[in-house]
Length: 292
Image 1 (cartoon, helix red, strand yellow):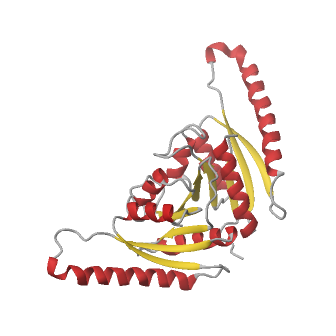
Image 2 (cartoon, helix red, strand yellow; image 1 turned 45 degrees about the vertical axis):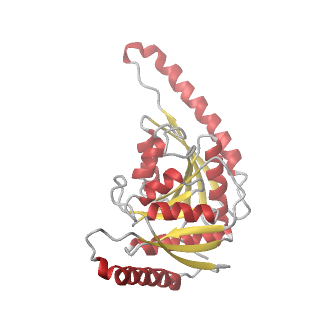
Image 3 (cartoon, helix red, strand yellow; image 1 turned 45 degrees about the horizontal axis):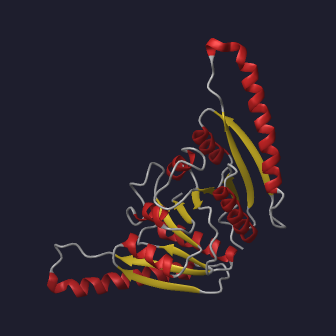
């Protein structure tokens, strides 16, 4: 049994995508023995120094809203599968995004699950601008899911390149695939060669790159420890972002796993800008794994 995910947080705002994220978090937790924490952030009202008399009323409003959300989250936590420890917490902060990042750091969360709406980019609609901020700055891996729950074949796709982060992506794919009783598809994409490559040696270079890709997949498959029904390896040729989206759609993937280096935007993403492209265009959930 893997312990890759020991503590899972779910940013919950009551929306359908947030509920879908919670259901997926419960399924992963049931298969990994992780605990689940439901978190809601109440945005603190702006102070009105010129109207000091309204302060007590605002504080009471926040207090009542907090009580209501604790009851709602407690009811959601009570639906956790047998054997999954689930709890709920309500935060009050002027900057919800920053408060959530601090919560994740302080509580050593390994995976954050949250929802997003629609296809075509991360939109600040699940937790205001919070979902967008967390995708960029959360100190842990982030799993984004949408409101739909299509009937999908049980396949988890892990996109691997030749960087050290490939091991973390494969490990996350293994953990989720085992938890979901799904096939794990390890995928490497050989990008088109630049124009300055000598045409005469083109085939030899491409063959070498394809073999390097196979080596990456074999190495990561050898690391797998979780009991999986089926693991497949796929070396694709083309533009990584397009090939991965097409592959996930062909296989009707239940979830895609990609990597992200650092915490300051998408400039250092595994496979270049591919992770952002998958988040923008896939209808299935996307797990963005961070190094460290």
